[in-house]
Length: 113
Image (cartoon, rainbow, N blue to C red; front, side):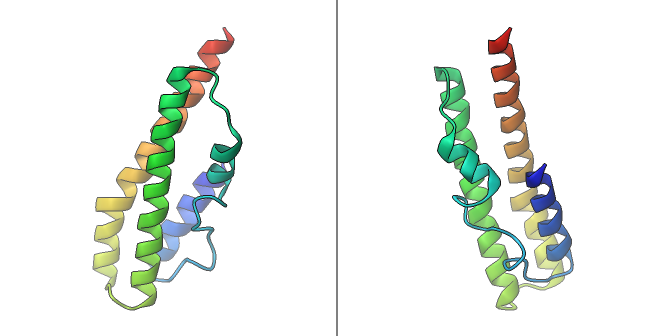
């Protein structure tokens, strides 16, 4: 749920063309998902593969978020550019990460059966 709050706040502030870097953890190692990724040990090869893909997408999402916040802060983008970047770069990453987290959760649930 913390991830969804993070996502909603980023989108809300970015759509107002406001720098969100002070309100959100943009370091991929320090956010909730980053802390989970650093401590979770995958129980099998399938979970390991999914986890590596989660790490990749999660890192890319944070990198793109950092770039967007920096560009907003430096006044390099107008609000239309911000919306375009959200739709073209960040929304696909948000969706992919959510799908991968669901895939990992489903896989781990099946292992319990």
